[in-house]
Image (cartoon, rainbow, N blue to C red; front, top):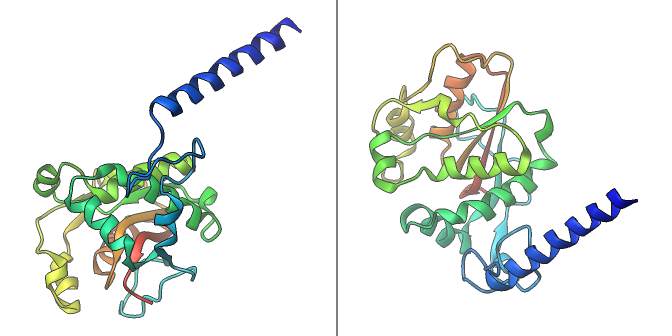
Length: 238
């Protein structure tokens, strides 16, 4: 009985401490900064901002533009329009790395019912070239993978997929040029890491033509991966 009472007192102290922190440091919407009065919330977006996000209702993105797909499906959280465009732009270019937390949580909620996350072996992210990552200070896809790992309990093995050379900016290129631009620009490292028979969730921020994700998936499949599901925050494909 004493042990139970002692345990309950500890819980009450923790609960009081959490409430105290919520008063002193209230959660705020990651985008607009509005205080989230409901206490600790799962998704750090206010109702107003969430209502302006156009969620992608289909399970999988239509990736027919990829002539020889190596991935086993592309799952998108949102359409790339409206508020999410500004969210991603801030996240990538305006030094707002904290945006990864709500984006990763939204991604986890989307994937849970589609690709049996619990049966996946690990998560990875599309890597940036080292000099570019150093200049930006972080890899946005890597941060989302980190957050997804925290939500799902899956290990994050992003460090075992590397970018071997600098490439041109994909957004300035045509579909054919994009595929050629990223060809042979990724590798698994170290080469002896065991990918054989593994099911992987490969994360990036945006799906446009799919060239980058497909090239990463090709490298992972050649290393022995069984299934590679790609997950993105947003896509311009309907």
